Image: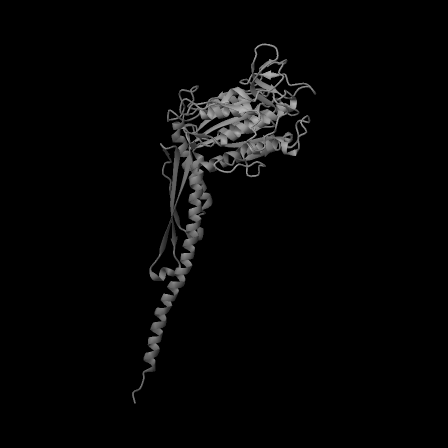
Length: 477
């Protein structure tokens, strides 16, 4: 009988076990280190994305493009460091690559960020695998912006407390968040009427532009000076302010417009003034073109007409207007970028086809305080709707509207002579203007959905302006 060498067999088992142990340790190590590498990859990707977004926002800081690029890269580095801690999951070193952001001729800034992290392995070193290199990249696209800021200058901003200095300060801080060399910003203010304080570039009123591209940019110093020189006076000619803002942003020829077009509208109250050409029963000139103010003595027909293109100039306090026109007449919405010839759009005092419009009493419309007040609200909402649904030569070119309200007056009924309900609070009108998601009359795409921010008092203005700027910049990515 053949005998078996048991010691020899035991030796084979030990060798097989030893080899299996190496493989087993390698497999366990691979699972553990792969998990660590996955965690590093996720954290690195998040840090790189944050850095790219920070760089895009950092482009707003600096006097020149070179300064802005340096600030963008510094912001990227800062956010990367804040989002990817040193020695994260044992990482020994990281390399961050931030090329200079590039302004594309098609109208956007392209910001790219990439990083590599070196992670020493643990158990899989038994397989002679000592280090894992983890890569991540991120990109932010920031579209160029065309924007008009519309500021309420009404006298209510000075009583009972003068909050207008805080309004000016917050507006200037808001302007600082945009890129002077490639964004375009215009400024409109309104009181009894409205005025274009700073034209947007390139309009006929501004033949040369401050940006490196001769058709782009805005002069921050000019806008700052204009805001500093504003005074609070007059009524709330919201419709005229919005009309002039729409005409201003549409004055940019179609071929030169930015992909992102925005109006930011600030007010502390509901509209109460209508811009139109009115026929008089007596007096000169006849007809008279201007802004008719609804807030006068009880029981009387509105008589005070102010210049439509001046925040304080009164034309007459005895207008002798018996009936109101059906639309704004010579005060129209135009567009120099449209294919010629084009027909200016008159603004109706009441548009039965637009959801939420208030019907006016009598036919023709009687000149009563209530009719004028309703028409003021109708016309603001009509111009805003026209901006949001703008189409030119068969192409949608919508303008997003953001609204910012200040003070408790917006959450109350400001007038008592129309029998308004709570749906006529100024805050509700501001939501309709911006077409917010929670507006009672929300319009679906292609009309853009905007944002309404309410500042309970002047201390909240900066936060509201910042929230609007963040949403605009989010849209620009």
